[in-house]
Amino acid sequence: MMLLAFIAATMPSIRAPSLHKVLLIASTYSLRFSAAYTTLPVFNAPRSTAEVLTRSMSASAESDGEIEIEKKFAVNDQTSAILKSYGFDVVQKEEFVDWYFDLPAPRWKFCLDDCWFRYREKKVKIMNNWGWRGAWQVKRGRKGTRDTDGMTTYEELQGKAAKELILDMLPEVTANESIELKCKSNSQYSTHDIPYLEGGEQLVPFARVETFRTCWKATSTVNEFSGLKVDIDKADSGYMVGEVEALCDGISSQEDVENEKEKIRKFVDMITRESERDNEATTIGKLEFVLMKESPDLYNACVKAGVIHRPK
Image (cartoon, rainbow, N blue to C red; front, side, top):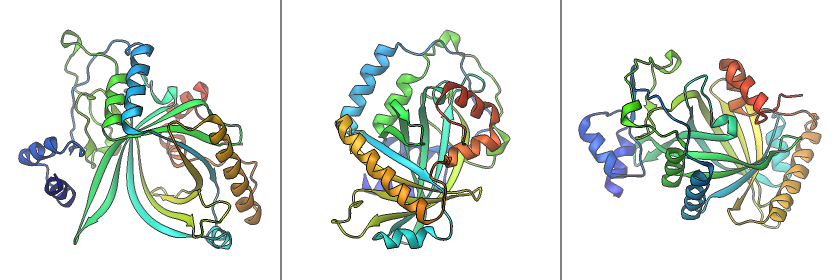
């Protein structure tokens, strides 16, 4: 399996049928392909809420799904110095691409339910070669996902559990209802290899975000904020944003979550106060920025559904 993973990671440009067979065996990798036309089925209503919840709980148990709590903040040329003054240092730099998927417009469903399907490809180096290694992910909002100050709480699943949840939440398709439709890919992505999920052919990309990330952590375990992680992101659009996050396991109590929220609020308040930024102003994320600029109809639908708040 390690040999197959090595082949997949070091030969990202090859799309031959033989490689396709190899990648089908390596279940942790997803074959990417670019197509001008696809089969778009006509679909029924999604499976019942009870069915989805049952499968969802099972997937979470198998994958030890995490709870991500985070708050974004505006960055400037003082941010690095401020983080160092609080005992934080750079621990990692990453480059990755996020593809976000939903049903075709205007049938958007999942993002309007605060459930975000994405395929994340990370740039990795194995020996002397660079390649891209990807995995399907789900960020699913919990009750009270977004606080009025922009703090968010999401359940995160990745890999097999994420793929199973995605497929289980998709509308059912029967053979009699499936029709061939020549559906041109969004010209915006025609030069890219669009990730493919077998069984999820009705999903289409609505956003692609390339990110260069610098990760910061406290260098001392006695630091009051040692459990927090700070990411400074710069998107391919040039937009920059910072985020302070904490991760809890899937069985954490609500009290634990609230404690982490307060710790994050305190740290963000300290950072923004020193950088003379207004902490009351809502800082938007990379995806929100892209939707505002490139998909205003979807952005407005998300605002109407209450899953995105317009910045103050």
